[in-house]
Amino acid sequence: MPVKSVTPKELTSSLYYYTDARILARSAALIGKTEDAKQYEMLAARIADAINTKYLNRETGLYGTGLQTELSAPLFWGIVPSELKEKVVNNLVNRVHADGDHLDVGLLGTKTLLNALSENGHAELAYKLAAAETFPSWGYWIKNGATSLYENWPINAKSDISRNHIMFGEIGAWLYKSPGGIRPDPEAPGFKHVLLAPHFVGGLASFDARHSGPYGEIVSAWKSTGDKVQYTAVVPYNSTATLRVVAKSLSITSKTNAEVLPEGNQKVVKLPAGTHTFEIVL
Image 1 (cartoon, rainbow, N blue to C red):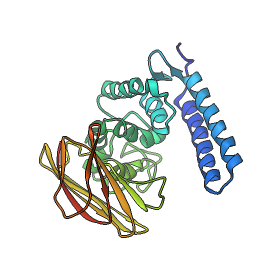
Image 2 (image 1 turned 135 degrees about the vertical axis):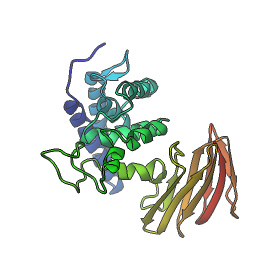
Image 3 (image 1 turned 45 degrees about the vertical axis):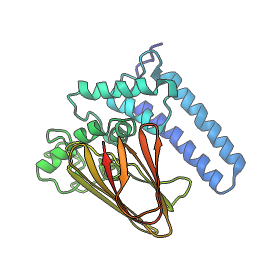
């Protein structure tokens, strides 16, 4: 059934209400407030149901009018019904192609677009959007002399012209999470256990991400020669990591007791502290 015409702002505001409830539920659980945690989990579930009832067309898999933000935000914040997720992802990819493989988002959309694509099998497209040298993109900024984050996509804007602004700053986090693949484990916070899932995107011959965590520097670095990647992971002392990559094969080239385990189309390696090197065939 088609949904009523809505503005992206209505949808994103509702999604942040859902997200806030989820944060409260998790926070309450962490400090032992069991009843509060249940209350906010139930609230979050009701909000998600209400959002999908009002904004999601289950026949087409479109949220709202199907703009980039309207499709990527529900995916990123995790409210898309599992049986419709593939359809929503495909709609997002098709929308980006229809927009000339360019960004068509504002502040909230830049938070969700690259992540929604990367987390659903389209990291190559996400990188293409980020690196595009034509307006609008971070690559466009760089080509035109930017060395910091601007407040407005147009570099010659007459208002909102800060040259040091977090407005479109999700690109920094995305570089760590997608080509770098570094994420904390919610079950072992503070990077006690590190989740590594780098995306070896075309257009980059090499990439090096480094994060100074509580236990030391975490490194996720790679060099690509097309279908082969040399990958290095550094896991700080007193911590561990799990590496997951989509690959035909993965061999460990450093001395370690780690074992490669196949899991669907992924290779999974449990890593102790130390420096680990791999050869990966894509």
